[in-house]
Image (cartoon, rainbow, N blue to C red; front, side):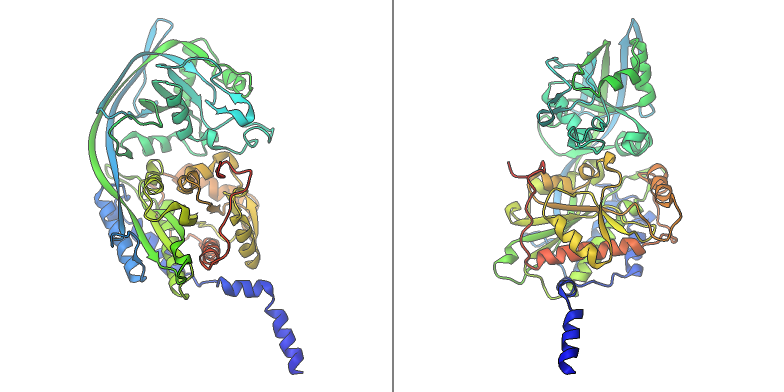
Length: 532
């Protein structure tokens, strides 16, 4: 009888259960989680803009929390901070174009947003030829070149948002966005081609958010990493133009925007001159400042493996204030920072893992992933010893889901770990439900992937349990169209984090497994980030 009982017990403690014990399921406190969000998204934090009074309060709160959790200072200099030198500019701009003998001056912010990237406070471009270059993609692996042999040096290039939304999965992954569709790529390729300026045509549908997000994110103030020379990744004047203003510009040239956009879906497309010129003036108020990444450390227990690091990252910053309007960034990304803190709490409740774990709260994500970009260029611990980055940006606030969406699916062997622990939750792993938005290329994990560190980034915005048909589209679309990067992204007591906290538990389990000494993740051969 005792033997039968022992065998029954052994069958209950099967391989999955034993694996679950290896990576325990922590009890994440809904109360504590909400408290972090409320504090970080409070009016006192003033929207957590880099270099503001809100930054001082936010990083002080994070230092306090890291210290209370028993995390060691993550900077080898003995502090919790990594200074990130930034250049802050408030631009006054003018954009006009001359087509068909007529000059048209556009309205700043309402029609367009401009920046200047050079070391000088001012930028001036006179009578630069206007050229439409489709999506601006130069992708040899797809046999695609939107520029062909057309010389655009000194010209103003107009580009469509995203990459070509094709049904053919062999070209740009079909309708899923690739890095060729990211606005940073469009700036980079315009710079490499020698363009003086670039204007990306904003369209709400392909972007996944309205033009007002561009205006609030880049219009009133702009940040870049501090540098002394020209920006190697952007032309002198990069910017965005509103769809209606772009259509009017094309119409002035006697051209149909929709027809040219359709032509740009072909490999045979060639750049088209609008037979006119554009002139730009940018005059910046400028200051240099140090913003900060906040870094906490759990040192590994294994004499050798503790020299390797698993990173959890989440950006603490948001858009700050605009007059009396506060962009509080409750979901984006006070919720991600709350998850970071609760995962750290879960780690501290366990014996120290074999590998070290770094908790990295980054700055200036909203300004172009700048805090992560700076860390990737100036790592506190060698990148060759960095096992993975698990990035957290926005937590599901609308209930439980049957699956976790894997934004970084197909890139590394982290896939199998996520699937393993999702199964133990009784859930599955699903592909990104909105691949056309290119979420991989819009959050901090991108900067780690670009320097060779395998990454994990998840979402939960589909397949809600016990909800009516169309619920996912209703709540997710409402957030992106009504709250994302707006003052209305505020804390709400009726948010349902039951699914979001399940996601947090899952991310803890994956990281705990990696920190516990499981094999280092490797890139899949098909990933664009694999070692060349």
